[in-house]
Amino acid sequence: MAVQALALLREVSRLEAPLEELRALHSVLQTVPLSELREQAAELRLGPLFSLLNENHREQTTLCVSILERLLQAMEPVHVARNLGADLQRGLTHPDDSVKILTLSQVGKIVENSDAVTEILNNAELLKQIVYCIGGDNLSVAKAAIKSLSRISLTQAGLEALFESNLLDDLKRVMKTNDIVRYRVYELIVEISSVSPESLTYCTTSGLVTQLLRELTGEDVLVRATCIEMVTSLAYTHHGRQYLAQEGVIDQISNIIVGADSDPFSSFYLPGFVKFFGNLAIMDSPQQICERYPIFVEKVFEMTESQDPTMIGVAVDTIGILGSNVEGKQVLQKTGTRFERLLMKIGYQAKNASTELKIRCLDAISSIFYISPEQQTDDLLRMTESWFSSLSRDPLELFRGISNQPFPELHCAALKVFTAIANQPWAQKLMFNSPGFVEYVMDRSVEHDKASKDAKYELVKALANSKTIAEIFGNPNYLRLRTYLSEGPYYVKPISTTAVEGAE
Image 1: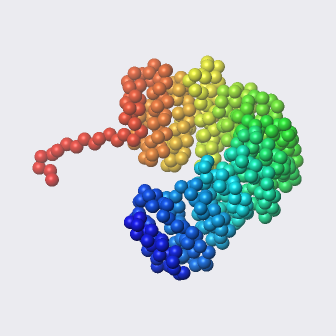
Image 2: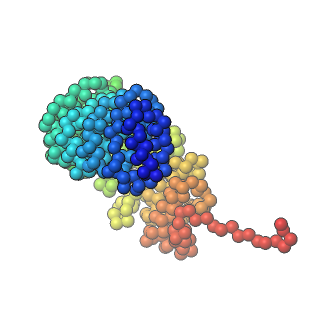
């Protein structure tokens, strides 16, 4: 089969309009194993196929792209980089986006290969074309270009190629295409900056990080909303947070939140700014961040009072992030009755809001209430028990009611809440004393889809693995939990049949 494909490939290269031969080659290649093609890789001459891409013929281009995708899989990235550089370069300027995507997928493989990437770095024109692909209308093309440039920048040579040559001017030129393209370049810069302190230095020296931060703190509220997402990505790294703190950016973001009350358009950017601080708190120290920037906590509490579901959703997500570790829980506990009132609101929204907001509330509750066994203390357990009673008059029944609704996402989110508290003795007592709850946990017929079965299994596992469960649930129930656990999440009880004499 591979020999037949090679013969057809040679035939294609001799003809001016080889449409029939291309169709035949395309058909044959579907049946040739990749291993056979790899054996013949040295014989493959792809130049003629790339040349056929230059003709303005839709079917011919489609066939060539599909054939090249298959044949290029059989070739080593180093071979492609060394022998098809000029073809790749032309592919990046082709008017058909499928050709650009094919070419960029090859570039992607080359930059992943430490031996082949040097060939790309030595080809200034090819690099320039990759940069200009960021400015195209097709998002898939732009994303592939960003990914390749980001990967190239993982090496010192790549950083120098991008930031210490004319390529930086090309990047700045592309940025001027429009707002969307400018944000794509910022996305690339943040990706590169996040890799290491050295990468960040290259990016700051280029002036592009400073430009991003200037836009973040500028007057355009829509631009602020977009830029804060990228700055939040930069803050995921320790060196990124250090840089933002040194440059006074975190203080500036805090000041903008302070002034948000007098800004009628603050709803555009406030959610992103609050998310920024939520992520900052959990990555550093919740206590330090909340003490240094009290406006953050104040604004989160305010947002839960909002009539805008977007604001409530962001506040709930942020509370979930903040309460996901013990230090964050203690920060929330210090707000006293104010936090208890907030929990009551979250409990109300979990019951009455839209499905999407209900799920966000349930996820936040799971995050706030979970404490790993090794971190449990009497004080923390008293605290979570008190918080739980603040959610509603009968929280356990509330979540059970939600889990019985015919929406798998809600069902799983409610099971997650039970799983979060399942290793805490006070919650086990509540469960055991709640009529029918133990049977509900053991009942496999309630869950019909994979996600629900997995969620129920996690709850059973959390209960069964708790050191206090046998004492609180009693040995017979403990053994039932262990049996459920050993049978796995998808066990189906065999249906016994009785033969009746004379039955057909």
